[in-house]
Image 1 (spheres, rainbow, N blue to C red):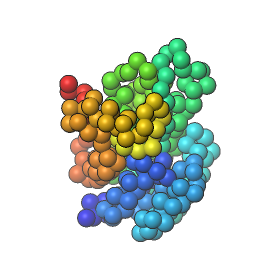
Image 2: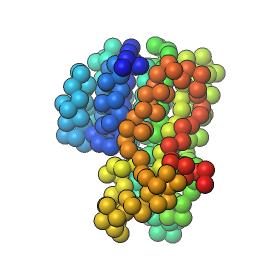
Image 3: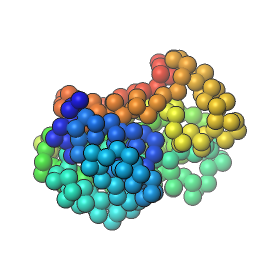
Image 4: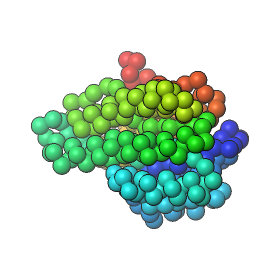
Length: 252
């Protein structure tokens, strides 16, 4: 307990899945937390369930003005801001021929543009306080491609390299802000519903697990604890890097 005392955190995508679990784990570890989501009812429920003065706000991560408002709100209500967790994201199946341009733009807007906007507008605020950390949730799909994940592969690979660029920029500017990415494989959240369209959820999870050397899909807590490490001072010498959470998938 207390690994994140004196950390003031904004977590996007906090209405469900990894974002929701992360908000609870970080709060339990002593962080002051704002959770945001496009679904205000879901993110409000997150804040109410966690307690510990976790604050919820509606947030369209694809909109620059929404980012400015949420970051100003977070700094005001937390007293400062030194951790940003870009967790909002969507997934969809589709090879290069099947993917419409509309779907391509939507996936990149939510999964990649949101990270660009969040980091761009957070840095002037976070740099005032130093000792900061940005954690961007990418995917193993940003490292290993799939024939039927054209847009998702592209967006998540973009997050990986953008993270490195931001890390180098922050180091060059002496902001004392680190930036790293996390690359999970299959995590048991509602996002898998977009992938498990041809099976029942139970059958689909079994099939996904068979692709993983550890023969299981991940839990949201697996990602949340990696975020704790990257948000804490325990990782003070780590920037421009990635944590891979894939059950051995990329080692096979």
